[in-house]
Amino acid sequence: MRYSLQRETIYEVIKATKSHPDAEWVYNQVRKQIPDISLGTVYRNLNSLVESRRIDSLETALKEVHYDADMSVHAHF
Image 1: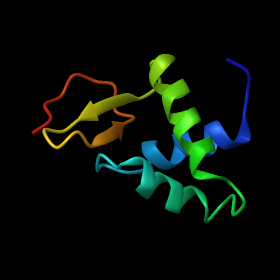
Image 2: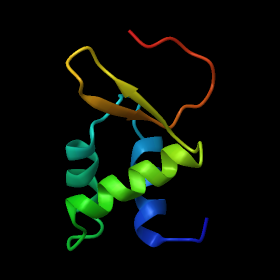
Image 3: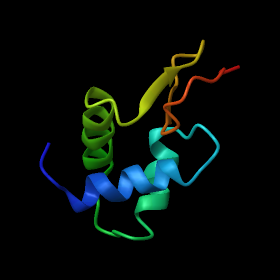
Image 4: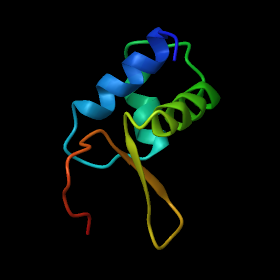
């Protein structure tokens, strides 16, 4: 995977939180650093990070997707 400022910023935002944010939260946090980033770019990069196994995605019973950069074995409730 080639380097991308947007992807690395998204990764760092997710890595810096202990919560399991959704894409909207990530988008709002990343916009503080990259104001012109689009929600579509955030979604594409989240998918790339999941595919490359740098982050994990978690789907809730309500079909909401949340993300986690902690790749160690741990429980999700």
